Length: 285
Ligand SMILES: C[S@@+](CC[C@H](N)C(=O)[O-])C[C@H]1O[C@@H](n2cnc3c(N)ncnc32)[C@H](O)[C@@H]1O
Image (cartoon, rainbow, N blue to C red; front, side):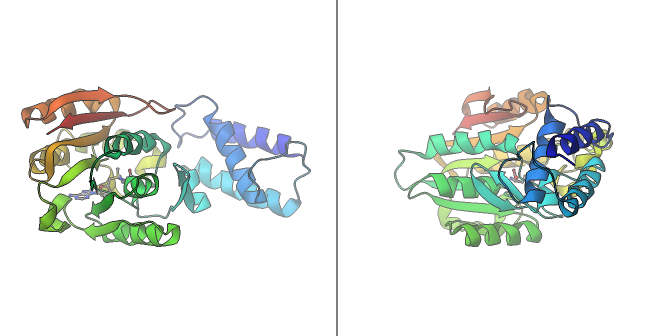
């Protein structure tokens, strides 16, 4: 069968899947093409190609998994994030394109600082921390996560990519060396911000494939960890340092309010990157 026909059929299957959130135009077509390229072992699919039977079967098995909701990154075993290939495995939050804007905001604020220090709270597999380490010079980068699995994956990512970043396990700041107090230039946080009662509203592709502690802090309003991070950041940031928090658009106002209540200045909700589906709320100490 020709690649073009395989892609057409796969796209139709994905469009009909109730497990997938169909928020982006062409999302299904792009994902089908991504998976076929992966099955073929190429960067780009030649649509006129006659796809070998063995590859067709492999591709169709991948489409079946995707139609059940499994994220493309878990099917492939890796995620591309700002040009880095990061491990994607069950049990650790999958790095998403939408988080690239958080990394971009951090990198912009770190450039030009003297001996800068960056801390990525709730780092997962090291997503934002590793992008910072890759794109900035002389920045000391730390990542923390409460989950041992996440810290293991973050360390493996750093090793494979030969990037310098220190990953520690701990509840928010608790694993960080005390000498970093009042020395941090930029803190990033992509928290679990789904309210406890809203978990059941998430699409299967998230609810069934991401561990619950990566989605919600079990608070009523989803702001439990944000509140704590805003309160505790004040002891870690240097004067003029930034706290950057990625959330969904409907949470941005409440997060901005929390930051103001904790004395942050220049608080804004920013929107950017190609996708514009999340917000990064920024505030300065
Ligand atoms: C939405 S994921 C973000 C992961 C990563 N920053 C990313 O953007 O790909 C939230 C992360 O918060 C971590 N987490 C949850 N509660 C935490 C806590 N109290 N302290 C530190 N990390 C926590 C989870 O283990 C998970 O890795």
